[in-house]
Amino acid sequence: MGDVGLSVWLAPTLAGGLVIAGVSGTLGRRVRMIPPLLLALAAVGISVVLVFSLTTSRPSPVLSYGDLGTTYLARLPLGVLLGGWAALLLELGVARRPQLGGGTIAAAIAVGVGCCLALSLTGLVPLALLLALMSALLWLRWERQTGPVLPLRSLGRQSAVVLCALVAGVAVLPSLRIGAAPAALAGMLLVGGLGGVAGLLPLSGWVAAASRVPSPEAAVWRIWLIPVAIVALARVMVAGPVALAQVMQLLLVALGLATVIFWGCAGLLADPSVRYWRVLQADVGFMCVGIASGDAQGLAAALLLIVVHWLAGAALSEPRGARSHLFAWVGLSGVPPFGGFAGRVLALVGVSFMGPVVVGLLLVGFGLQLAASGAGAREAAMRATVRGPRVSELVGLAAAFGALVAGLVAGPVLQTAFGLHL
Amino acid sequence: MGEGVIWAGVLAGGGFVAAAIALFSVGPTGLALSSLALGLGLGGVASLSAGPAGFACLAGVGVIAAALVMLSGRYSRLDLSGALIGPALVVDRPRVFGLRSLRAILGALGLFTARLLSGHLAAGTVVTQGPAFACLFVFEVGLIRIGTGRGPADLALGSLCAGLAAAAFLLLSVPSSALAIALLAGGVPAVALVALARSTPWETSV
Image 1: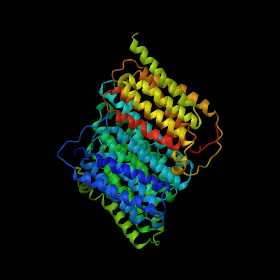
Image 2 (image 1 turned 90 degrees about the horizontal axis):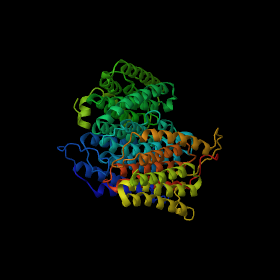
Image 3 (image 1 turned 90 degrees about the vertical axis):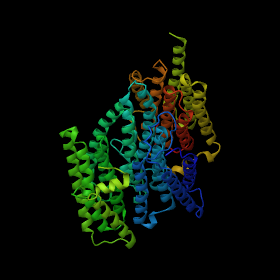
Image 4 (image 1 turned 180 degrees about the vertical axis):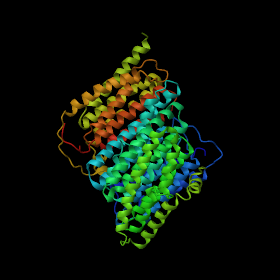
């Protein structure tokens, strides 16, 4: 795809102004619904422009370090974007109506538009700034929702650190090209920045913050920022210099394993109301380890886990649906042949060449996830007589069923959604 | 020692002065002063490779942000902190070290680290390590401001430090690069600084 040009920049700029006005409450009550509508139109317009400008015959251009780059959307990021919009629709379908204010929808769509831009730009500085801005936007939104409590302040620091790390990491990259090889510094900064968006340890502040806000608000981070950060990590590793990729591989495996073990334990011990966010974060560790393997199976593992969490996360967001919760926890659990199992096994296969220690630690994480999901399933089974509203329960059940089936049809799902052949 | 190397040292010294101001400044006036110093100091560093255009780009960001922060005291429409964050809950947090003492200790450690790292970092055609040293130190000052920050304004200033340092280093490394990218890297945190400069701090401790 060539340079899509002005429309790609103009629409989100307009949308950004509107969302700030909408979120800050400076608009009147009647006018407040206009920003979400305009944002939705802008989002649809941008998606249409990107999809119709897509050409699959050209190879993916090299990431650009020193300028704004052009816009280019390969098959895989396009799948992530379309999947994200579908996941957002699912989330809105299962949410309780009073929780869905205009600001919630506006913030979700604004972050989605920002992520569309981040994935379609080849310039690394705009990509870094967009990701950091999206995390900062969510921090501001959540802080307004819940007031200034400690997890939210930690998230604010995390957003600022992410911005610093990403812009500095991108600035160091041209030094790599001229052969001075400060690969360790650039690798640390980029993994710190992109890992911070995804929530890798030690920058996992969003997990505690997400537990404090209503489910539809917190879902935006899960639906958009984590998948986009994972895809951006994979893209930088493939397109960046070899020395950088080696450093990033080492760091991603180390931090990914630490994240799997820490959040796996936290998920096992957590209160039922916040358990899902811990399980998700442990799976982000699996995704990063998969990406670090550098082969197709590792990438497939990360993408499959993203799909499973899009579906299971929506089912678990349903306020009172015990049946869909039960199915979603089974899908996440790691019991063969369901979605969670397929994703984690693919990650294990992908990193098997790294030796028994890495595989052993991942198996420990696998077990912790199984136990945490089992506890979640047991709690859901004990509430099985509780039913949610009919429509949202049906949507939740469909999403949970999708999380179950994703593992059985992993190959076709990955091929259809992301163009990935295993 | 050539004249160019001396000149580079002088300009890098401007970057260190800016970093010191940004490290210790407090309050909206301090933030405006920091922004001004960072723009001029790092603009000078960038001008070694990118010339007057590089200086104008970064200095412009710093000067405009400083002017807007000062004006936000007079024109409340420029202060978006209330609209963006809402009312803040202020707590008193006792500290082992005072805030400035802590920043001074961390700054000394940062200076040492930046010296070590800058020896391994080449910035385009600039031969001396001084400018890269200054950029790294300003970046570390940004991280210190974020880590020890008492409120959203400190987070914004820390981001501005990192953004301008990255922009200056990018202009040193790739002089032919578009100035737009430097403007973007410095401008986005500068907008955040203007919007949040007068936000209520989370802690009362100084």
